[in-house]
Image (cartoon, rainbow, N blue to C red; front, side, top):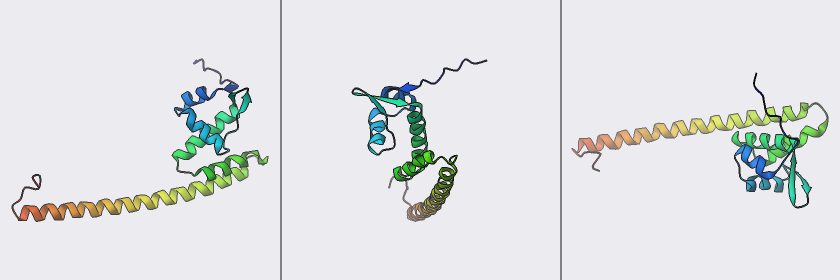
Length: 137
């Protein structure tokens, strides 16, 4: 049986930056974009479990290629009170769109790789036909 450390109720910017391996500046940037809204205790920011969960979702969404505007829209839908149905619908729509874009980029990259291999083969054969060592060229 493992003794898991309970999740704290509040966090400092240093706590979250360390946990998610981002800089405090990154967290402040997300605040400036209205993605996070910590409470204040004097000059100190105090983040709740909700802020922590939102930061986790923001970072995951960025890794998946979602824009900040998309993330804000999806996060703001959490509070609709519909059991996150609309939030999940929007996520599904955005995820399908992102997947289609990535697949198109992959096709483009594969085409470019194939073209580059063709250029390499053609130029290398041309050099060999002239008796030139391609490594020395």
